[in-house]
Image 1 (cartoon, rainbow, N blue to C red):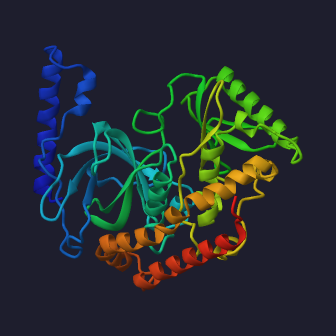
Image 2 (image 1 turned 180 degrees about the horizontal axis):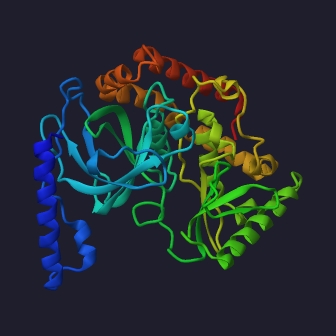
Image 3 (image 1 turned 90 degrees about the horizontal axis):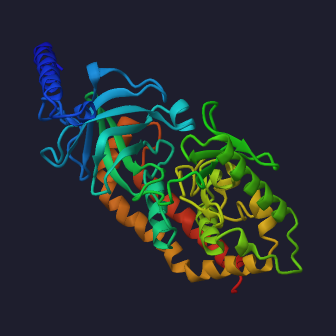
Length: 417
């Protein structure tokens, strides 16, 4: 911003602080209410001369003193506003912003971000919340893999899948490209809707966990990161660990020649639907490596999901194991190695595939509709990041061909139930 605008901005902030202090001392507001007061500016400037409106909303973020977002830990105070074709669609919202992701943060130029508002707000018609993610999809030449897979997961009836919407991002006046604004995975009425007590769990199988996170290891030496309860005490951790070890002991003794009563441990239909989302797309993380979530409530069964993170799925990447259209990807992975021995479970696997085959095929139409919607923004994105692809149409068609051939292969090898 200009020196003059910086001066006016700072004066406005000082007056705003003194005014807010006077209100609080008069007893009209609590200290907590200060966080909901907007800054005096009515809008955040948007310079889109070189990147004009391309048919999707524009998210404009300005950090305090244009501080650079350098890591995934430090939360930088900032403001956010969403623009449409020619004007602002929202108020200016105070937020914090930090980096997010593992490989996508450390190994890519186009970064993803975690943003947190000071109050619950509906963004791009999604239910009100404070926590959101801006996903860069840097490794995805189509820029739509997460979006279309989430749509498919909702279509086949998985209980909660993050909602997402496309938007172009401007950070401190710099155009950063086309992103998906996505709900984060957390416990809440409009997110993962489980009771908020210490007998209810949201867990991620996560080999990318960090030192400061709550992680327990089962007897099979798999890391389980506890997302909820947020600060799970020792008692809660022990309760969950005992259940997981009991489940894994049960799995190790599954006998294909007898009734194993798998339904006493998992929601079979839910587990199978989650499996097919991962298997169809050959999601690298879906093999119980990372971003594999489930919920469990004491006395109940394990519910798989929400599904998350598909930018490296659907072929077209450097991992040859998941680039081929043939072969089962995760049938022998971790829990699946044992659970697939159960005859009843195998029957359900085949049934669900044939029951929802048209829905799996519909993802091809979703890609066409999505491409039509975001194509102009995608072209602008790849002008900003030219090393990813120089032919967007070709990238989309290659992904569609991969998926079409993947479905054809599965049709050959999945028998009628």
